[in-house]
Picture 1 (cartoon, rainbow, N blue to C red):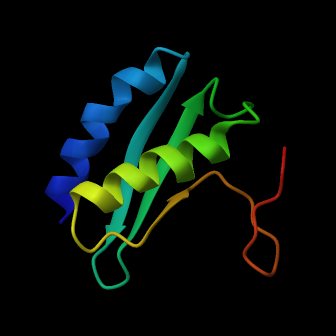
Picture 2 (tube, rainbow, N blue to C red; picture 1 turned 120 degrees about the vertical axis):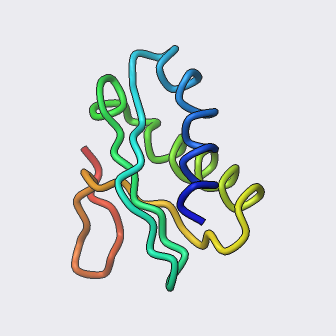
Length: 87
């Protein structure tokens, strides 16, 4: 699964880079299907980065890689209930 996820991330990167950001694969938990990525550059301070992550990257990975259940940003701060803290 990790190889397939890496290939999809590499296909997505040019679109993210076009907006002065970048995305890097940081891990895949094959037991839970959770993919961990790191958004960098302009994505760090962009208010739309959560939309990019969930509606873009997560949707594409779920469609193209069987077993993917969620995509999380390693740099994302979470509240105790697991919801993201806005920047």
